[in-house]
Length: 474
Figure 1 (tube, rainbow, N blue to C red):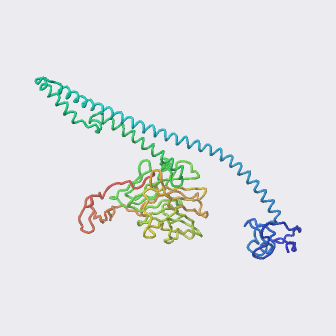
Figure 2: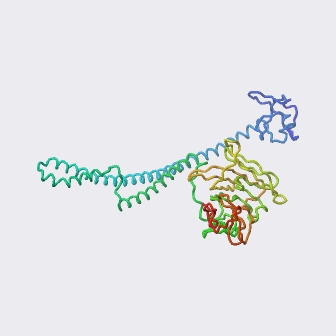
Figure 3: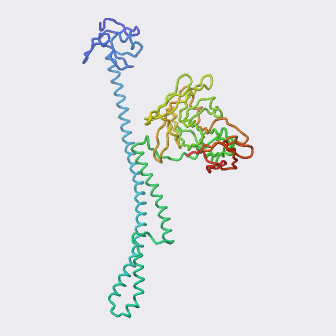
């Protein structure tokens, strides 16, 4: 009964209409009834049983004629939008292509000029030197020919001494040797070094521009972070200090353990995107990402999204209220949950080990020396990249920030070492990178195994008391 029931889903009456001619199968494969409604939610044709009994009963239903009319109008409207976008994109594409061509053209011209200048300087100087050495060969040749033509014995013997000197000088000539030692050569070498450095820089810029153009996802020029980004310390251990520009962190192992929590603040108005690149310590644990500003002095009290290097393993930290945060890693990397830690009555922070498929199965991801972080505020995503070269980066993980946590409350941060390690006295124990353990006896460090005292140097040669830069904004 295609129209035997004058009732629509939901009990609304409707006038009977003539069945429409349809191409293909006009009956429902599930109920065997005539298809007479269109489900806008699932974009499929359904029968009356599907509409009032099964999975479509709460969906937006239309008769075929009404759906046809409405969807046709929708397509026309979308066509206009796409046409406008196409027109705009064509203009934008022309501008972009012109801009890229000009940019690459400038890079290539500067590179060619630098290479040409370096080539001309080198060849001209060497050519002048070789020409000067050729004079000695020509002189010796002339001297020998003149001596051989001399028939008078006395005159021959008188001129032989000079001929011998000319020959010995010519024999010492090496046309393949560079410039003769002296101030001229030293000055020229310095000039070539300066021009060579410019050439290498211009070649790197040109090469990087091409890589970014072809594969922008994995090749982005390592542009230094703006100088308006600075560290704002929330806690500093006794061995920690900041540079004057507040972009570098130093640690003196003699005074205490590496321990600091620092916010990354901007002196400018926040934009839709925030990016920072940090160089991180080799011999200390660290975490970088986003945290709630109110809980920066104790990260366990609030939400945290970050990348964590602890106990020689790289892991991600995400916070949720009721359901888990979503995160995705780049191809080849895997995330394995390692447990949860409750941070209050509602918040739960999850730690997940990041691994990759190696020759021996799943293996831990190596420590990244330099991490680039991109916070996309509108999309509520946080991406971490390993900077490998000047123009190359590898994605480690991208996190989806939970809508249940207000993004306006989050701020970038870096935590070095373990949080809340405070000591106003000398560090009681210290471990050298060579593996030796030392303890402080009140006056000096002593070797744990032998009790031998060391004023300031380990047996491997490393200083026990040295101030080193452990973190900086790149």
